Image 1 (cartoon, helix red, strand yellow):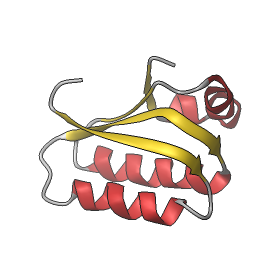
Image 2 (cartoon, rainbow, N blue to C red):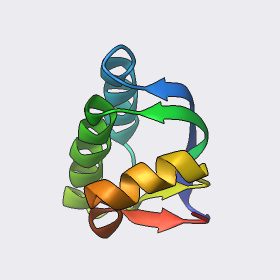
Image 3 (cartoon, one colour):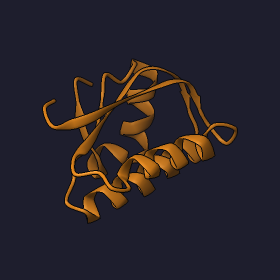
Image 4 (cartoon, rainbow, N blue to C red):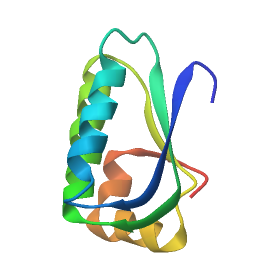
Length: 95
């Protein structure tokens, strides 16, 4: 995607890593004039804490009128996103 920051998540997005990723994603938003595309291809686990981070940061980007896109979701992560209803709340590409 053009005019967006690329951010790759690797490993687990759970209660142990969620705080770090939330802080990083929010700091990227500060002073930013472009959206973000999150590469999920290397995510091995997505917990409710990870879902919370994705929702909160998505809302923050959208409030500033900036795109927030998840892409390249592995099948297991894509299934979690679908089952939880997250797919209807976020912009997904290459799922």
